[in-house]
Length: 72
Image (cartoon, rainbow, N blue to C red; front, side, top):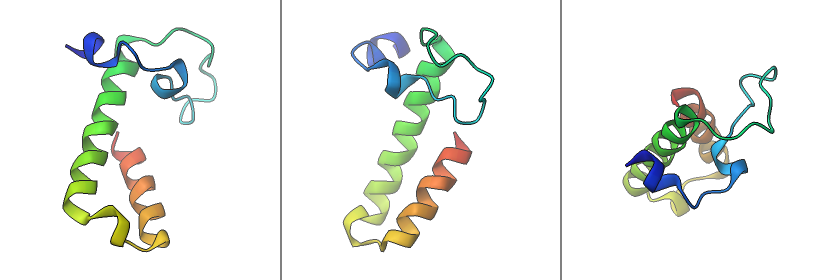
């Protein structure tokens, strides 16, 4: 299911090396990268649905993005 759900995603969407600068950014996405992408997407969707994203001030959105990144 993970592979199927992320099949048409770009390399940049799947591989996130911000937290591990030693990682090779050009490597092909692993299954863990795909799972992490899905986890981030699901958390973002839940938060967006719960908080009505457009009504939130920019500072809170930035903080929410950072918290979502740390949670994933």
